[in-house]
Image 1 (cartoon, rainbow, N blue to C red):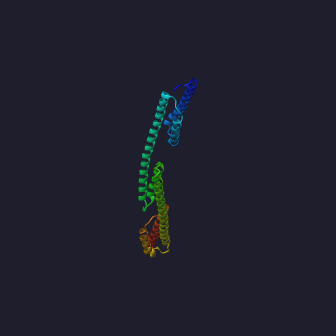
Image 2: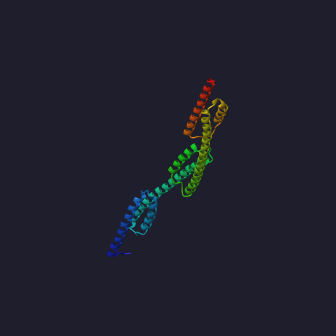
Image 3: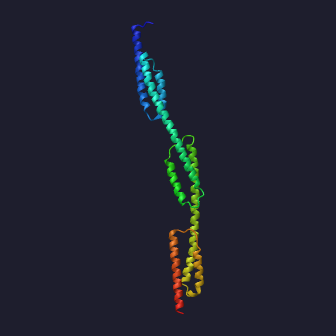
Amino acid sequence: MSWSNGDWQAKQEQFRNAAYLKESLIQEAQQLAHSDDFRSAGPRMKQLSAEFKNAGFAGKDENQRLWDEFSHARSTFYERQNQYYEQRDLEAQRNASQKRRIISELQSLLGAQDFREPGQRAKSLHAEWKAIGFAGHDENQMLNDQYYSIRNEFYEQSRLHWEQRSMEMELNKNNRMRLVDQAEFIADHPDPKSMSGDMRTLLQQWREQRGPLKKEDREELNRRFWAAKDRFYSRRDAQFTQG
C-alpha cells in the first residue's frame, strides 16, 4: 500500500496525538500507583485502562513502549492494592478476635455478688473496646450488637445491686440508730443500777449487728453508742459507790 505525502503526514499526526494522550494517561497511572487512597484510586485506574485502550495506535515501536510503561504502573498499583486489602483483612481478623475476647470476659462479669471490682473491670474493657478498630463487614456489627447488649445487661444488674445495697445500708443504719437511742436513754436513766440488764442486752444486740454501712454513718453511730455505754457504766459505778 502506497501512502501519499498528505496521508502520511496525517497518519503521523494521529500517532503523535495517540502517543501524547497515552503519555498523559501513563503519568496519571504512575501517580495512582503510589496512592494510598485505594477506594477512589481503584475505580480511576480501571477507567484509565479503558481510556488507554481507546486512545488509538501510537506507532509500532512507540505503542509497545507506552503500553509497557502503563502496564507497569497499573501492575504496581494492583500489587499494592492487593497487599493493602490483605493487610486490612488480617487486621480485621485480629480486631474481631480481640472483640470476642472482651465480649467473653464481660459476659463472665454478669451475676457478680459485688459490683465494685467488676464495675472497674467493665470500665477498662470498654476503653479497650473503643480502641479496637474495624472487625470486618461480616462481623463488626454483630460483635457490636453482642457487646452492647451484654454491657447494658451488666449495668442494669449493677444498678439493681447498688439500689439493693443502698436499701440494706439504710435499714442497717436505722437498726443501729434504734440501739443508739436506747443506749443514750439508758445512759441518762435516773436509776442506772436498775438498767444494767438492759444495757447488757443492748451490748449483745450491738455486737450482733451485721451488714454494710456508709463509713461516716458507721463511725458516728459507733462513737455515740460507745459514749453512751461509757457514760452509763460511769454513772452506775458512781451510784454503787454512793451506796
